[in-house]
Length: 173
Image (cartoon, rainbow, N blue to C red):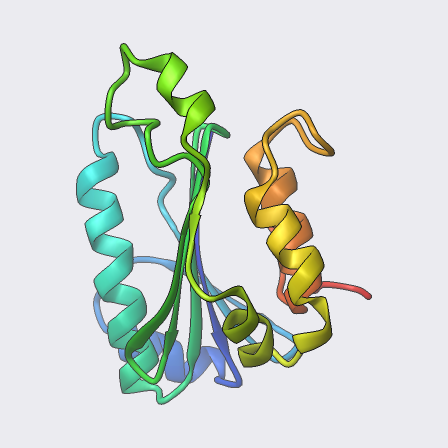
């Protein structure tokens, strides 16, 4: 099973519900912001759902003039996330760029590493520039080296950035 979450910093649940309009999604207020919980992705609908979360994150970030962290976990095999600052994409991450590119080419996914943007900028955006090095380590780490599921990687990245993890509980430490 996977999940799709969208964290919006420094906004209220009411502001987010209003911005979502008729769109169905669970809105969870947490300390420091709001998490929008979308329907879990499936293999069959992955491409359209990826397209759905990206413009939604960009739109809400711009409309609410805030920082947004959108994350998609597909069946614990693929972790994608995007960061938007006031509507502009400032970071993107793909834990396994070859995962859906060539299902028959499983050997390729072992030789192609994760793709990530400017990690220092990501750490600064969330107020933790001193954690850039360890964050880069978690972003580039292969499964089996400290975690077995992509939700575990997500939890550690969220903790380092001070964001809620997959369980939507606020980060500690």
